[in-house]
Image (tube, rainbow, N blue to C red):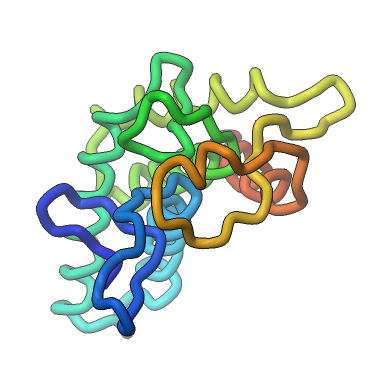
Length: 175
């Protein structure tokens, strides 16, 4: 219900009551959870994962990555609404995507041509770490919205999950 096969991205939510994806928004941090977790899931389950399940996860991951790199900003980050360049650049989701890119490279699921996107993301993330270590430009808690404007109006502030996603990305980059 969240995965959009036509472009490889994930919607923020789905309602069975209205049978739709609310505002049809491709939210950055929401997408990053799949980018990051899918690679950890594949590695942790390893050979206990059936071939068909692994193939499904890997193919949807690769499709998502190919979609995401089209939307990567020159800064290395992604917009909070991935396909809307009028929305602000968001660091926590970008960190989750960077982590997932690096994990895909490490596992050999992505070839070396994707390394440039991961490095660009890491550079953009580092530029958003304040002198006291706070991660800047992290969207606050984000309820599902009915339009892109909802997401554009979410305030940004240092948040624990932003710190955590950045630690994950930077730790993986150091490996």
